[in-house]
Image (cartoon, rainbow, N blue to C red; front, side, top):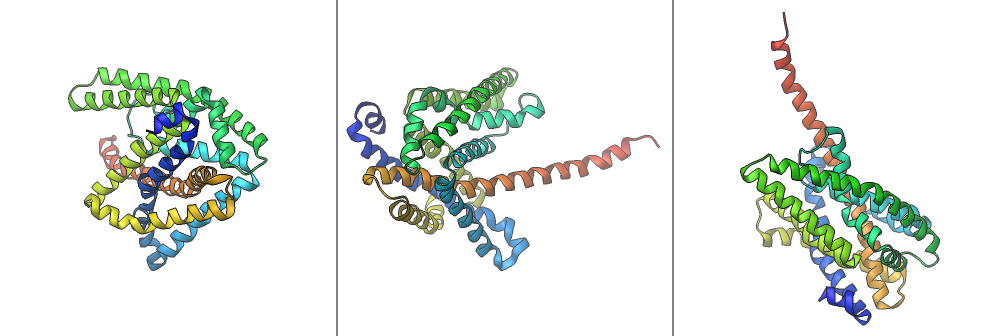
Length: 313
């Protein structure tokens, strides 16, 4: 239904925006509404009972800065949001040991940004039109500058993503059993998504990736970590999800203004999503970096006794 609305009928644009907003609210926002449960075991040992006020103040403060950024510096906000999203999506992908070690972070960044690089190359005019609906009036030049810079970055990152995909395919050829199936299935999903990004409207492709791939996997991973059923997880995430929906709607209606209800929905989706996404990816990004550093320190400590025992007297 969304595909038909985007491809065949401009009159259905309102339906497309409405469905997009509803699915992001039901699947995308709950993914971020789990952040307090992600942050608690990391902050409470350090801050004690103050962890929740500190967490909420920081989270909402970053969100407010992003909303202000759309008015004060829209070009910088667009570029920062897109690049940070690509990095976050890449960090959330499986850590596959393929390619030179120093280039693996680049491959992950390139792969995570495929949902951004591919539409910028194949649907630049549509991306500009969407950003024109999301940004304040008079931001045309800023949007042109931002998309120009991001498109140049896309032409650099797409070859890296292709090389990473090829190395993973070659690695699959040398594996057997479940590892081979995982590598091949992962490559098939990436290839299918790239085709979707290239042929579908950016609204549809981002919706499928964000809700159907990134957010759903994140929620499923959290559910397994917590050992909860889906109803239990939904009940725990409902309060912040509803609160985020209310804040996004209020910002769209009172702050951003509405060029018609359809324009308000699109602005609420993109500006609101960017506002709640930035603190989300900062939280997970810092946690990933800290935990990776902790793993390296642990590995170094484990290797140190072996090196001492194996060294000549």
